[in-house]
Image 1 (cartoon, helix red, strand yellow):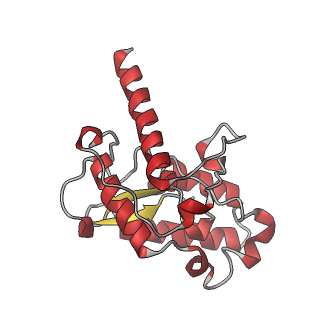
Image 2 (cartoon, rainbow, N blue to C red):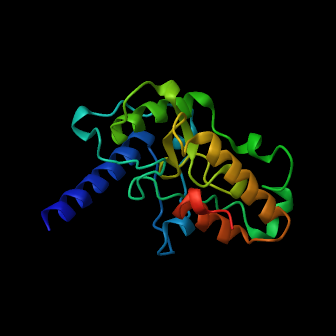
Length: 195
């Protein structure tokens, strides 16, 4: 019971830190699953300002295991602007991700902050600030709950995930898988997301 309460408190503190550091106002999701959650980020959160450094007391409240993010800290969030109906003008259009990708100064600041939250060792260069639900599958570009510091040099690392992301994008754009199914699969476990 105490462990559950401590975990709940850590998640609440993480959410408050994200909201406070980003200036974001997140609307409650109408869906019970994190993957279907659609958050609206206020205009102040779209600036290129980086989050504040993580206070030492919150270091390590998130845990990454075997190349997977902590589902409580990084559940994955979709971009409501990408739908099954507009695939040809969004994720299936060449160059689309470049139009929505957040600037490096935003993701680098967030990566350093989240490395502290995850209690990860090493330097920022050893991690890629990864979109759990990738931009090429309609993932939210800036929501910290869709971004996490993914290790580059481990067996289930960033380059392996990129292959999965490209494969799922091809399946969705070829009509062999729905957008919602691809998003759900990659958010649940990217290592087993490809059929």
